[in-house]
Length: 472
Length: 60
Image 1 (cartoon, rainbow over the protein chains, first blue to last red):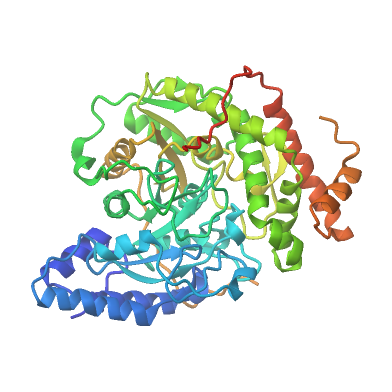
Image 2 (image 1 turned 135 degrees about the horizontal axis):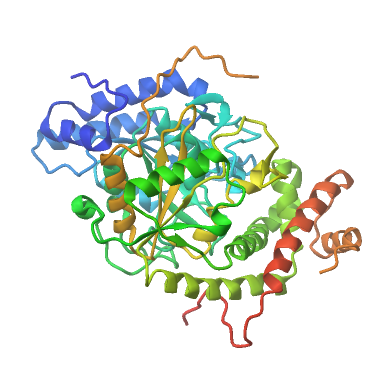
């Protein structure tokens, strides 16, 4: 039974498998063939788990044959950033150093939950080394490439996730977001990404970066797929001390509720400074479509970004301190030098940043008493060229690597849930953040779904050519 | 926060932390530390009351 629709959504695939119109094996063979055809160009995957995927697909088909209930993601191929534990693979987290680690003995719980819902893991995805990156470049594995223009960055650090989903290699991928690493690649690759509330999805058995800022979440080409994956992964997990004990709060049943009655504002001030015209154009289009007129001033957003920067430098350095002592030459130099500097930040300054964080959280919660949704750009610009070191923001030349997260950092700093939605501008897409109060992912997804239905946001279906020459 | 003596600070800190800092890494480490300290100063200058609690909560 053939199934050859590279742009099929997860919902469509699951419906086809559940109804018997396609076998899971056919879906997975099709995905594996597409990965084999296009991954040499996109460099999204660092490992393809073909044997495991075929076995898993056979199990889904066997369950269908026995008339057992199939999960909502039956037969849907997905892939994960290579910082997720995958049984029998070393969790490399974009590094050379971790390649010598023992293979993981068990999948991360988010993979287990996706597969419990019927999804089929097909591989591990490229990422910036140890997630300290906004470019999607990797000195060891090469850069993941943007399917819209392979000479351009995917954004990072979940670069392979952005590339694989935007390129139609898989309908769903998982990534991590410490300061913007789901939202930045979503923006540059023109797809949907959900960074849930801090603590919503378990991070157990994934390689960390900054414990007090790390989140995990899904990427997709449609809002329904995003919600379906998110719902499949919710729920408490004692293996992650930060994971909430709240019961799952499914967002899928809420999608159709629309935006009626929602108070939607647009972030001003800091979130306009430095933005390229395309970022402001995308924001205006989304705001207009939603009828959002009120400008919201997020207090001290510049300091929030600064504090997130300081905490990241310090906590990230602590994580890697022993490796910096013993294996410093094996790091990507750009990552190593940032981590060494982070190790030297006085602890007094880090504690102050953590105190400021609570102050800022209180102010943001006050803002959410008078609005339900805040819109902001996801990135200051569309995808820069791979290898581009600097760009001009607000008239100042700044390095690309740390500054693509200018607008994402003040939001993840206090763990607010965000859906990044893709505005299909020409020649390149760019994202807008739909920011909501803690634990209200359902509202952000409702707004994203409403925008998708009226066509303001969409993940473009691209014509990829496997013969595309990869730039040197 | 003064950053003029930063070279000395980096050399001393690398010794205290037992990180073997290669001379060719020094300019990038210094640039990164300067940027981080600039951001830290931006946070540090923001007045908070003495009873301000840090964000992470430990539950015994």
